[in-house]
Length: 447
Image 1 (cartoon, rainbow, N blue to C red):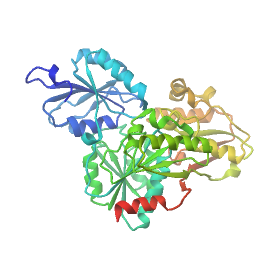
Image 2: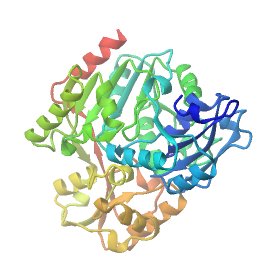
Image 3: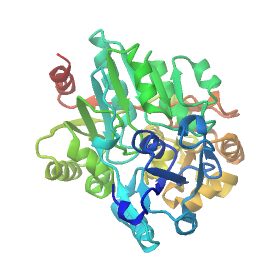
Image 4: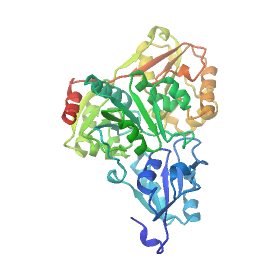
């Protein structure tokens, strides 16, 4: 392994893993946990609030780490390298521009450590069941509706489908090692955040069981017991945790060029069997052609499928002619760098009198989000990683001079918020422009 020449004979190589409470834990579990020649001295945290200051618990860290592993803020990287005599810094999170990854590499190298990125061979676990993976080049391209669409195609074949969702362990990590969600009561029992509910609830609505958590080999083995097919539901633009029989990757014509500018989204395109061009009904032919050309330059062998992303709105009459606040999926507006989603599309189509800017009324974590992600200004990101953020979201809505709320998140916000104004939900779905191509792709690996 890189960096071993710097350690003395008999010493364990000292590693820091850069993460965001997801890929970092997985890479530790499958690459480092049981390796006596390596000591992971810390994880770092970014993107997700309130992750740093915790400990990766000994129940998950294994016998080599009886005290667990500390999680510190990424801003402390240089001091951490010096204090802990770090040999190697391993990058393990997603949706960062290539230049951003290399800035982190430069920080590590300047501080005296090697910088590594683990590949698919080292980090993908093999299943005993067929695996269909759905990933993307950026956050907010349309993985959720695509996963639902593919799940339905599989269920139409009489197959038992279990979705395994990319990790979002924001609570008690030991308790979240392996989670199963089949009912709304499971969401409450596991004290799911808004972000978790956004991903799990639509599957539950469709009758699909969802697994998630921290230990993804344990999760896979549990899911295999009740599945004919495993459906990997990716997060951000991360690569799959499992070896895939069919890898479907979404590209975004509204962000053409990002397919070759973000990590690990570019790797996904290069590994793809099928590339879906989503949002074709919102993009121009020039934008669609540009993103197709970008995908073909990276992976000329992938099948390219054009799809629309139509928006449906429950109760358009409740918002027509009214001033509204639009609440959108939080990660899409933050590290996804989008400035609108399904809610804005639906509100404009319904003929609202105006979309009110929430920023002047934002409190606490919502105000902090606008300061960090100015692209989100004008729309309300559904930040809900913890109780305080949910309270700040509710307080911001309550303070706004609007007549209705348009929710572009995939969940029923009234399950976690109390609002005194009409709330209507907007949702994306997937529609193939040439129907049957995704079904045919599934048949090629399942029959």
